[in-house]
Image 1 (cartoon, rainbow, N blue to C red):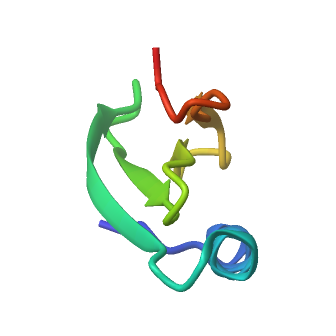
Image 2: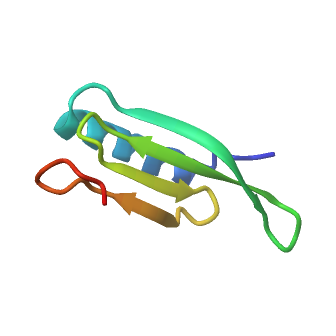
Image 3: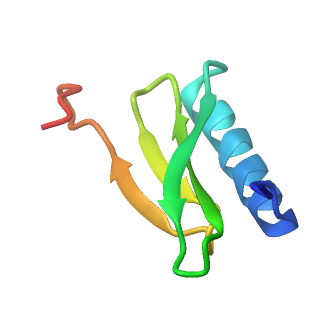
Length: 78
């Protein structure tokens, strides 16, 4: 299973660096299975979160942003 393509590594590094720079030093990246393509290739979903509560989910299949969460001015995610 090949999750870390060169383009994905660059994208995740840029996002991690930017979240660390703008959201403090508590940035995290987690990975989970996201299913399979029609050809049977496993795909993964990377969740990036920073200290301000900004969270985004990105697939390793084309670097597609699946979800993007930003808290409002009161800090609510609704």
